[in-house]
Length: 202
Image 1 (cartoon, rainbow, N blue to C red):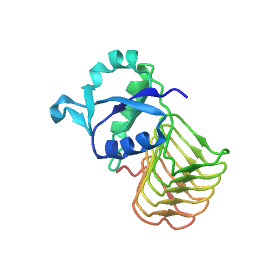
Image 2: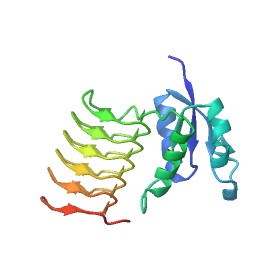
Image 3: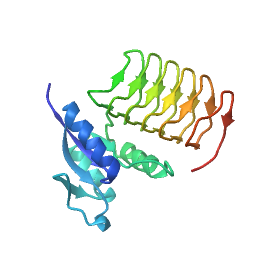
Image 4: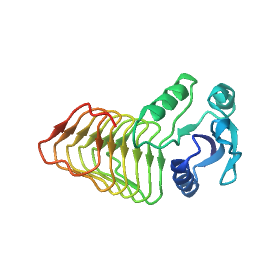
């Protein structure tokens, strides 16, 4: 199997974790990182900074594969903007999976997702585009996670849970079976069964 080049969009802390997973998976070769010049970086772990957002059309003409490697805690807006920019310029956004992650053959992951180390997506789980499923997170059977969400380290999303677009589920949170989390919510602790949270922007 040939190794394809991959652009990383964003060079901060989440990028470091993504690099670790991408290197371990060994399906893609990191061609470089797109990062604002104001940040005064010239490389991240030896991978060169190859341009800024405005350089994407030219960069994608050479390397079509790209991944958003900006993290998401307070707001999903930066990840959403960068994902939209990549789509606008015709990028291909692969799913990246750590070798220590498990994804059921009956689960569905949309483009631009990353499954970090020891995460698990169980049968009939449906995960939308541009999502981060972080280390040791569990997505159980029949759970639905919409686009641009971050399920953080050690979180447990139980069976039949539905999560709206742009949500952040904090480390160690446990979402009880069948509950719904409305779009744009930030969940930092357990949510009681039967609770519905809507429209709380973090």
